[in-house]
Amino acid sequence: MKINRKSRAGQVSPKASHCGGQAMTEYIIIVAIIALAALAIFGLFGDQIRKMIGGAITELGGDQSEVDSATETKSVDYLKTLGSGSTP
Image (cartoon, rainbow, N blue to C red; front, top):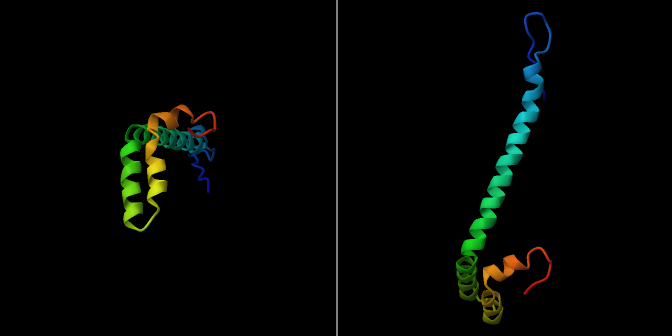
């Protein structure tokens, strides 16, 4: 819902019409920064995260061979092949 702010003369102020677009752009920039930060964190700590999740899967009765195959490949190798669409 768009709120029009009218001046005393009854005209819509030009600043009010640009406010919605500016806020949306700011939200998009913030989301992009958060996404890039998440990728960087998973790139740096991906090996440790994968080992912790693998340990939890094993404790819950999961297949140890799947955990071993998932933890063999380093995060750096996954990041190198990220754009090509293939797995190492």
